[in-house]
Length: 263
Image (cartoon, rainbow, N blue to C red; front, side, top):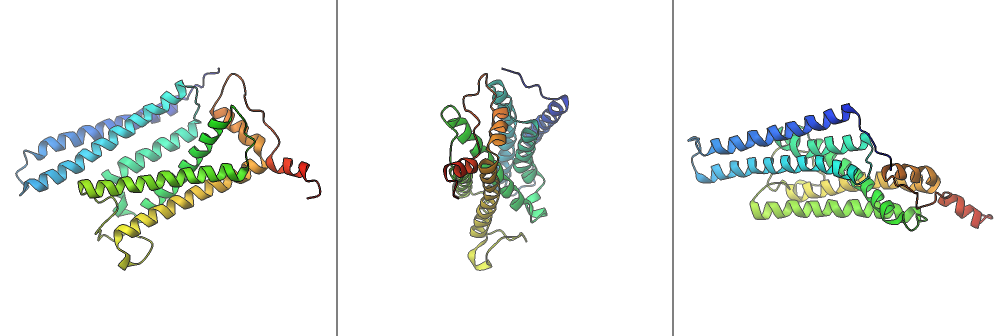
């Protein structure tokens, strides 16, 4: 099996992100320690609220750090993630998990949250298509383009819904405000004021997730239908193996035309 060697520039970017995450977690840990010696707080609840916020930042920083090493694990298992895609995923996770909270981008830029959810819908749909290829390549990839696209779309939407349930759980149990309940800052949300900021925030997120998933699913539908050979060749580059188990066949539309020449 050929070993894919990543460029030095790629490693520099990855290690820069890792160092920033470690520094971020360390700074927030120091802030937590200092909170207990700060006499400026008037109540224990204020201290604990700030501690909870800093602890969440540490958790997400460490989780993002672990994900960067997960990419190396995939490479060792001979699952080749293209450098461009890996860089996009890593930077996206870093921006979505760390920058959003630490720089308060959600309130500074009204389009930021919508952009993140649209892009995450696209990424998850692409991962869904990778999944259906990985599962079926040892048997047959003679699938309907609609079925492949529908799976990728459903995979993306399902994970998006689970993420919103996760946010709701945190808001209910730990008193966080991930779904913007009672949020008064001027942010853009779909819907009307009487529907409440929490409902509007959740539905706006899901709609953006759906739009992103639909864009990628539609793209793969046409690629798989009309350019099946090139699509499977791209998948073979992502999952290289010593022998190709799935023959690269004619596109779905070509097979349909051969079976129904009168059409």
